[in-house]
Length: 108
Image (cartoon, rainbow, N blue to C red; front, side, top):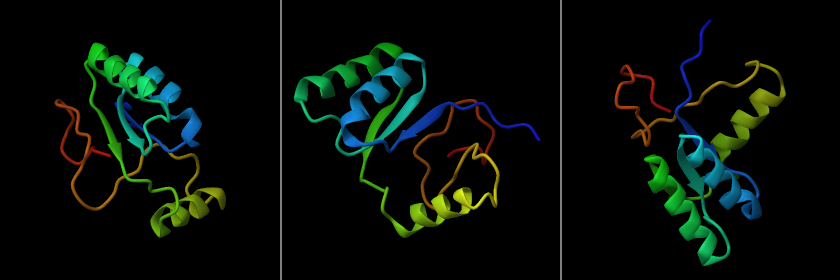
């Protein structure tokens, strides 16, 4: 089985790691969906936005999804080894990321 090329990341790490992770992924050319908060200090938020602008990637912030029933269920399925190593995930509803040249149905 071949996996599609990754073009976006979701960052749901501990809050104090948000800015550094978002900055690095943007610098590497990944679109970034970051759970709130972007970063505790305002200047770190500005640095992340500037890094995304400089890299020409989409950067957006979303509501914290770490503790939803869906996230907990996915974590349990992965932890139990039912799926093997995760490569991508999709959700029902509008897609936030779709590469301009990606085939239909490959958004995540």
